[in-house]
Length: 246
Image (cartoon, rainbow, N blue to C red; front, side):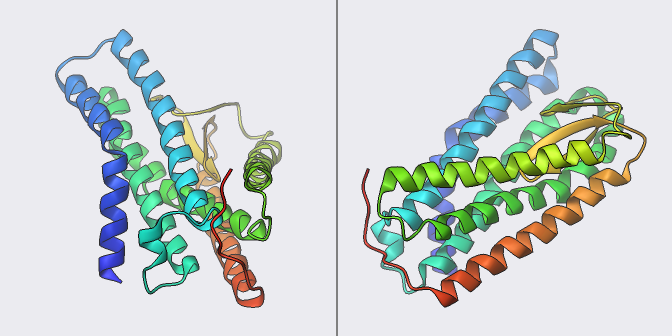
């Protein structure tokens, strides 16, 4: 098992090494030099790179589990479902680590509040990522019987986009009376509090700090539900694991 985890982790980290390297360069520059232009460039880069990394890691899961590619992993003496769970953990760790570098860079200007901000970033962030990738697992097993790769991809996208934005809009609707302002994305403001609607980060202005922890509990709960449903479907239904192509 350790060999499997080692192989998967090395391959995943190597494939995302370039954006990590660029983000580290931004961080080093920000330590010695700061400007509004640099902050703007970094903000645009970070938003774009996080989105690309998320899509890349998601498609890697899709490529392995639904399309049946990646021969090396398929010949391992483990079930595809177990390997998918390992992929979920590795993908979450990679995205969290990348976001952590960006978090440090963004909060360099407000060093006195970096620990306060990390309280809202640390555990809540990793739980939001686990919630997202567990939802991805569930959507993949739901469409596993679909033998058209294009139909499967579109269905997976629709399931994930619909549920993520359903959580987002529901959260905003429920808490609208106590949220003064909100934006999707990352903010360095000392007044805003980040909450995570699945993978979407929402910066809110409110004095009700408990909202961040409510969303943490929700993400933990949804992760458990998604994963249990994924495992239950795996136990109750047999699948064809033949390789698919577009």
